[in-house]
Amino acid sequence: LKALLDQLKGKENVTLDGRKVMVYCNIGSPDDVDPVLANDGGGIGLFRSEFLYLQNDDYPTEEQQFQAYKTVAERMGGKRVIIRTLDIGADKQADYFQLDKEENPAMGLRAIRICLTRPEVFKTQLRALYRASAYGKIAIMFPMITSVWEVQEIKRICDGVKAELRAEEIPFNENVELGIMIETPSAVMMSDRLAKEVDFFSVGTNDLTQYTLAVDRQGNNLDKFFDSHHPAVLRMLKMAAENAHKAGIWIGICGELGADVSLTETFLAIGIDELSVSPASVLPLRSAIRSIDTTKNSQKILDDLLSD
Ligand code: PEP
Ligand code: MG
Image (tube, rainbow, N blue to C red; front, side):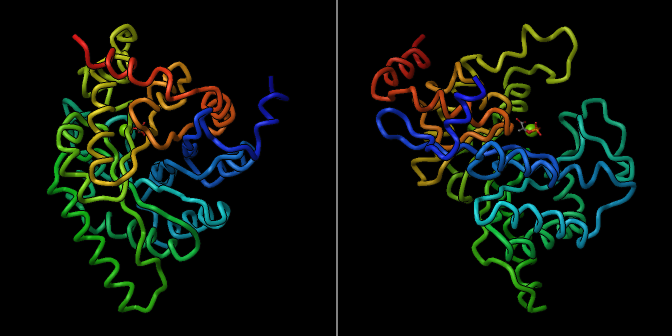
């Protein structure tokens, strides 16, 4: 099997009827770039920046972050590297943030909510990201978005950071793509408006399943209920994809579900443009994509999804 998969290295992620799909990788630290390159990943679809925050006893400095992002951007050699801003809180805790104990941390002060509450922490990360953008094709992605105003505020803060760097004559890419994670039902319901604000969407199916089905992603004894194949989750994907395409932007999946080859044909029917998976899943997914003819079953898959 490994030999068969190895033969797919260097080949395109293209369906029998000629549709190309971007297959990117999820990584958690700069060391993970090796398996990405070894498995022929087309880019990084989700670089979880939390490692910088979780491995330290204090806030990582701008310089520490800059070095980490620059390393990944350079090693990926011009391929897109989507770095997600810090997603601390809930299942990912760092003591020095001194967050209050919460009854419902999954619904608490986490991810982008921390960034918008503590703009100095956010700005340090954004400065590091924009500085690193001079060394490769970096895109920035924001987690746990629920509202249009959040994205507008984020963009104002980004513009402020860019103005600062310009004034300091520090090089950066003026056109860094900005995207958001679609991982709350609210983001799906607002995806028509959100799509007008950003360059891309990436669906976090782990959290989207949790929040759509109201089932704790870390809960014990909930396996039977934590069903990412639930039609409610798939309908959410379809709605977000339609709205993304209406606004002329692309949509990917970076949650675990993206690697599930039993759903690849469904994702293509829905119109998903990119799948970001663990490096080991790139070639199996390429194999699945190359065996699909999207002209065959897409309509039936969509009809089944929406029928009562
Ligand atoms: C997700 O929620 O699906 C996701 C990709 O992000 P994380 O698992 O890091 O919350
Ligand atoms: Mg998530």
